[in-house]
Length: 439
View 1 (cartoon, one colour):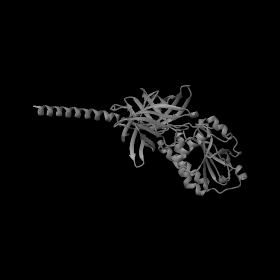
View 2 (spheres, one colour):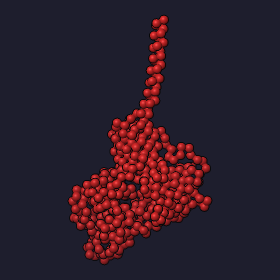
View 3 (tube, helix red, strand yellow):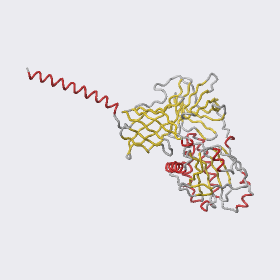
View 4 (cartoon, one colour):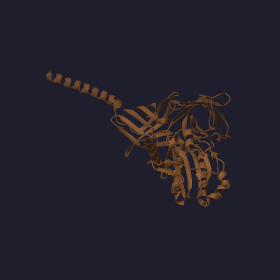
């Protein structure tokens, strides 16, 4: 009898142990503090609502790597640490960061975006593994058609209007594309149409954009978009296959084409360097006004880094005048070094000032103004400014990017092929008075 009691008692203990193990396993799954590789649906919280984007977590030889997904673009983030239940990542080439607690298959934390003056804008962040949908888990099957080219008018909260051209591609409910503006493009956008409503978003490590619009009875789009925590505009879009972007508002020129461009700014080691430095004499020089915080400047830097490696042996130099969010030199130089590392930049980068356009105009008083980052200036072998182009249409613009790269490359090759001539004679030529260009 005692033996039977012992057997029953042992079985009962075994059952209780099994139940406890199951409870522990279930609870442990939710409380695991190791980062789990896989596909995540990530969300940022903006004043306009949820901004979703794709997030892939991969474990590679050097450790964890993140991929930010927006349409065709996959941004690779390698500066990642995951330890003791915490994820920390710094966006490539930017001072923006992502931090989160690791809770099994879920992440919860914040994205911190650097803004002018060195201020930080913090956006709540969360992500869950195993989800690949963007805005809606179940797609709608009866949706408006937004594919094509649209003429866009943006209106700020202060009532200021500005133009744009949107280009969208649609496959069933899914929509990708971008919006071109005079100063550049909104980069890779992705989202969905649900009934007569359009939803688009983008977070690529640089900035956070969220768009919502509704198609009215006439087929136009009425909507609004949010950029980070404080940026907000309304927009009206009309379908127009022949839409042309008006770039006159950002056009920059020399005040006096007979006066040569000159400047002196410190390099990253605080040593002053000017355009009259011996290393630039007799060379073709491309000068770009840029900033590590500027997504379109990143797109241009990827192109210029390649162009410089290709043509520097033929007499090309590139100088990037960096206008950073930091007034502090050391911080500005550190941000610029991150920018250089991202693209393997070998050309000259100088710290020219802060990221305010008026301040940039004061730094280069020979120009009629600085209205866009980037603004690119071509100087020939005699020191004569031959061309100024405001803005940059990046890879998200497709054919526009291809054409811009072709134009930039061919014009630079033309200048490089020119022999050096007497500077005084060049001043009397028509080249000195070529008009400015914009995006």
